[in-house]
Image 1 (cartoon, rainbow, N blue to C red):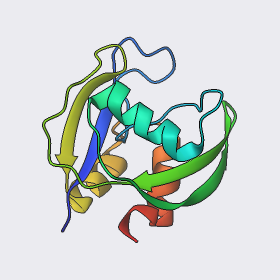
Image 2 (tube, rainbow, N blue to C red):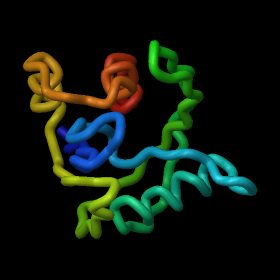
Image 3 (cartoon, helix red, strand yellow):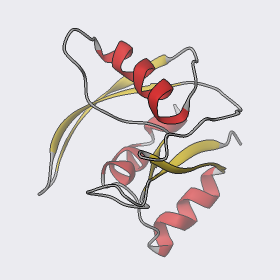
Image 4 (cartoon, rainbow, N blue to C red):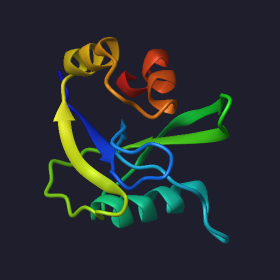
Length: 123
């Protein structure tokens, strides 16, 4: 099984300290398209440059946020250069390990289980 890279938000994050999420996420700056924003966020948060494959879009809404999610994936084995203001840790997990983390109550960004349960990551 392919490992999945997860990042853990920094302990200083204002909304989700020490919560796990897909490798990077962030907003789109003026003049950027979605892919350019994803490429920039990869570089800023975990210090990598890698080719991205577009996976799809999903609309997410809960009591705290409403987001249009643009999902890309890449293959990259490291090394990573973390921005400590954004990311506490980057770690590889198997699908089974992530399933167990979700069941055990490990802290995840709320969008993570939404995307995970749709099976988008394993297309």
